[in-house]
Image 1 (spheres, helix red, strand yellow):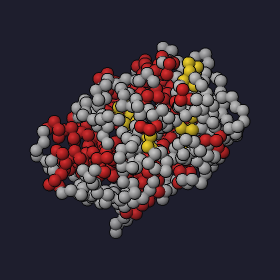
Image 2 (cartoon, rainbow, N blue to C red):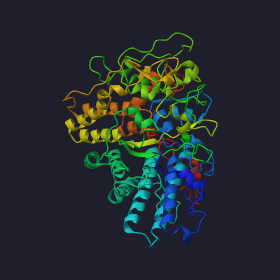
Image 3 (cartoon, rainbow, N blue to C red):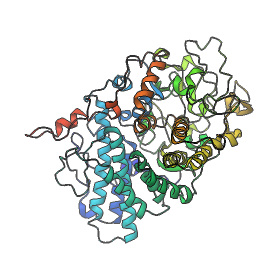
Image 4 (cartoon, helix red, strand yellow):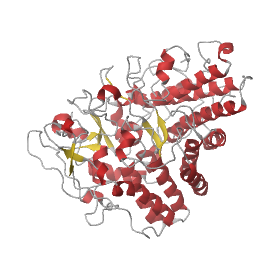
Length: 591
């Protein structure tokens, strides 16, 4: 798309070749690049380094050079670490494929699982690159103060992001910045204050708009700063910054923040980078590299099996998630306490050539922009056939993911077929405005402002209630889906705002907010981390296992304990940190 930072193409052209000396040990201080410091030490050179720091956002940059591992192990969308562990998705495929995910899905992991090491290395590669930018920037004299502040602000935002991911994944991790000399640093210091400082600096120093839409701005920094406060339960501070972002924030390309009318516009390469985009990782298809490295390579496994997409049947939504989209026929509101008591009808155990009638009861329309299900349009690819597109229904269930699936009508432009599985140009939303509104609702509820919290939740729900023209429709001609959609809805959709006065206590408000985050942000990598920070992970996840285990085999035998709120420090990194006095890095409790 226009104005995206095509980071992989720039790297391929040889403007900069970053060192990957941290392949085995992120603690080794890498060189700036293959060019001399003298060549890099100007505004153009430091901007080239900055682009390399953006390139690491994809999580899979140079993953092979980083010592092995697969791109999905470092996924920036957190489909494994946020959605599978949070009960929104099954691993999918079949039981034996990518077996490393099985133990993650059942909470039986150990530090030797290579997935955690790949994720760790990818995030510290991002840290390394941002530190290289900041160190070089401090040595450049011929640069305006405005540009210096802009470059430093972007680098510190990116470093804040990489460390935020490390913190929510592993909790106690070593802090290494551009001033660190001995990089064999222990993980005995809480890094939240340093993450706060990076986002605060970015918030204070970045401009409101940027020359390319993919670059971060002041208001993205404010949203991330508010999120950092929220994770620490600093609710008054979070409330203040979220209010500023909501009232004054604009995107990097100058659009005032708001909710797009069409919910699905956030997951379509043709309509992304819109007014709802706060911080998104830019993806580009067909970039001239003959790879899908910048085209969602970390999601390449996650297309329906035996379908036009070829591969590979992973990342299947759970029945528990699907049931959360059930709404009350009379009120259009969700069943907060007992959504599994009235489950959405599925085709579990029914072959594709056997008759099936989809659910006819009231549903939130976001369901069918999030989940592919039998006999409901799968974008413009035809009706989802059910069983024939599922690799192993007994372990993964009957559903398919949908938010990262490209449309047939523009597949030539926005899909990338350069590999054995497809890539696409759909951006990865790290923070979008609906997320900001719901985080702000939390902060307001936790500080006793229940009416404001309700307004924010209703703004999110109102997008769906007010725009039925954007609910999923059936096809004009079922035999020829490319002919377009009819005026008939694909299901019995019904969604409404909460009535005035619905929130009268923090507990009551939080129950609704927590539920709204799930249905609004489903399959976007947030769920597990939300459950952990809310302190409800053990109860919710074990209830999920009990319910879902009656439907599929993959989660049976799982059990979540409080120690598993953080993943293990990779054993490989502990081994590499070992000195004559023993390991510098210490393992998390419970592993």
